[in-house]
Every structure is written in structure tokens, then in C-alpha cells.
Amino acid sequence: MRAFLDLISNSQWDSGISFVGCGSATPQKVISNHQLGQRVDTNDEWIQSRTGIGERRVIGDHESLIDLATDAALNAVEMADWDVKTIDLIILATSTPEDLFGSAPKIQSNLGASNAFAFDLTAACSGFLFALVTASQYLASGSIKRAVVIGADQLSKWVDWDDRKTCVLFGDGAGAVALESSGDKSGLIGYDLKSDGSKGGCLNLSQSNIFLNLVQGATHQKGEYLPIKMEGKEVYKFAVKEVPIILGEILEKYQIKSENIDWLLLHQANQRILDAVASRFSIPSEKVLSNLKHYGNTSAATIPLMLDEAVRDHRIKSGDLIACSGFGAGLSWGAALFYWHGPY
Image 1 (cartoon, rainbow, N blue to C red):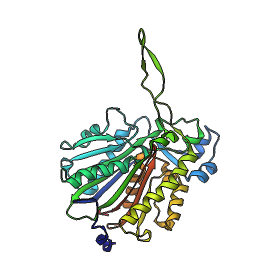
Image 2: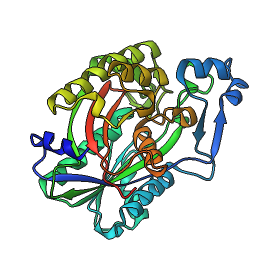
Image 3: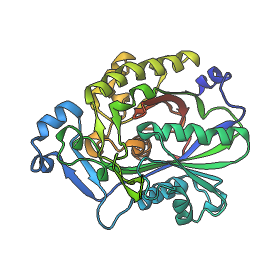
Image 4: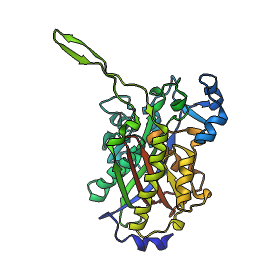
């Protein structure tokens, strides 16, 4: 794959960006399709045939999203062999923070990364990819040298567990990558990000519309959110249409043929979406990374969680070219091409 480095001289970056570490963390509690079938009118065959999901993880009483995100970040930092004091930036991509004012600073504190600034970024299932690109801008500018990007979500607390159309889809988890600036342009080749707010009603987690009396003649809105609402067919049609388009455009821009991709890494939402996108580019199934059978849709965590699994079991090797796409609520979607340069 090193020969393809000659193809990226028109990269978007002034300086190089390297992926040097990854990590993940998931809750201990596993909820199977069979167990869900004891609560709602569903079964394993119905769920697997429509989604490819067999089980999911749910955060329990003695776990927290911040703990999972901290563990994922620490695993990525350890793989990169960094001193935590050398981290300059931490971005947490999440739609389910434990504190609406931001959970990233707490992770920064937990890590002991006292020299890093930290903030949350919300873009739902596209969040990790949006955060990755955001961190890369800081690195490419030369203003920082090292960044940790985390994708973590706890959708189990926002699912209506009596709605079989949505409760079977989601799970909790966290994943992270360690990025650093480098002297070449062999890491992040390029990206494209998009949003279409006119279709946001297809998938949302909206605030309630409850107003309470404040003083005479005035009310205030109660601070609470409704369960996840999704129009599954519309989201599916959106993904199978837009993801191949954006991936095709970025491959064409950087003059890379689909057969030269080592791995297709998509947001883990539905196996049928993964299969449809792979088929569009004639990418064989053995090059399509998938673990949603065991985790379901963990929103911003799916891409780094899958990346970490494939790196640690030695499927992804240093120098491999990865085509990546995230998509989901907003509606938002994006694509990126990058080389993995971690130690594995």
C-alpha cells in the first residue's frame, strides 16, 4: 500500500496526521435478543434477519459512560505509548453526556491529562467522524501535537424499551483513537462531511414540550427529553443512497480505486446497510468490518470500537488503507480515507 502515498500529494493537510493508537471499553452486561423477546413481541430470528444484531451491552448500576470513555482513551494512549501529560486535546463525541455542560473535562481529569483542553461534540452517529476531522484541523495547523478522540454513547437510557422497532437496535459502548502530527502526509488523506436538517425528524431524541407555571403570567419549559424516535425505512433509504455517493466522491477525488481499499469501516447500524454499500463498490465481505452482531448500534462509539477490535486481533495492520463513513441523526453523514499507523 505504500505505493499509494504518491496519490495523496493533493491532500487537504499542510502537515501529516498519524493514527498511532486505539482503544475501547464496553459494559459488562450483555442483553440477548432472546431476553428482549421476553419483554416485547420480538425474537432472535426477527431481529437478526432485519438488522444483523444478536445482542447488545447495557451500562449497569456500577458503571458509567465517563468510566467507559476514560478506559477507552487510556487504552488508546497506552497503545500509542504516550505520557498522558503530552496530550494536548481531548474531544468526546457523544449525544448522551452525563453532564449537559460537558463530560470531556471529567475524562481529562480522570486521565491525568493536565495539559489538555477538552470539550464535547454532538453529531449523533456521525459524531466520531466529525470529531476526528475537528481534531485533525488542530493537528494540521501545528497548534497542537497530540489528540485523543473518543466516541461514547449510552443510548440505553433514552430508548423506549417497550418499543420493539427501536429498542432492539441500540447498545452502549466507547471507543477512542490517539492522533499525532507527523512530518509526512500518510495518515488522514481527506474527508467530506454533510448535513441535511430538513430530514432531522427521521431520527431524533427531542426535548419534551412540557411547560410549568413559573410566576403569574409566565411559564418555563421542563428540562427533559423524550425517548428516541426513528423512521427506520427512511433512515435505511438515506444511508444506502448517500453513503455510496460520498464514498465514491472521495475515492474519485484522491484517485483511489475501491479494489485498493484494505478495509471498509462503516458506522455499525444495520448489516444490510453494510452489505449494500460493499456491493456498490464490489468490496468482498472479508474486507467489510462488522461487529454489530455483538454490540448493536452504539452511536458515536461504533467506528472506533470496531477499529480497535480489528487492530487488536491483527486484521488491520500498519499501512492498511481504510475507507470510513459515519451516518445518522441530524441527518448527518461523512466519509474519510486514512492509513492506520499504529504499532499492531
